[in-house]
Image 1 (cartoon, rainbow, N blue to C red):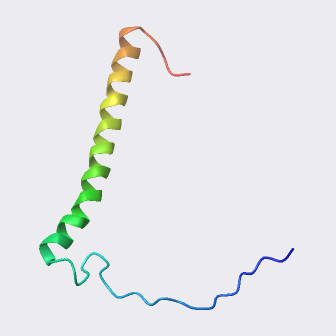
Image 2: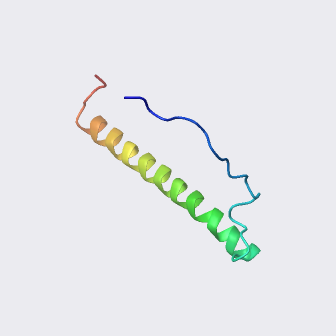
Image 3: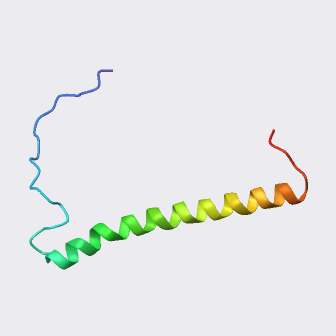
Length: 65
C-alpha cells in the first residue's frame, strides 16, 4: 500500500490571522490576550502546587529521591 504524500495546493497566509475582516482591532487584541492569560494562569498554578509540595515534604522531613 502506497501513501499519497503529494502536495497539490498551498494556501497563502493572509497576514494577522487574529485581524480578519470580521474582527475589529480591539477584538483581535482580545483574541491574542486570552491564550496568554491561560498560559500564565497554568504557570502560576504549577508554581503554587510545587511550592506546596516542597513545604509538605520539608514538614515531613522527606528528601528528594
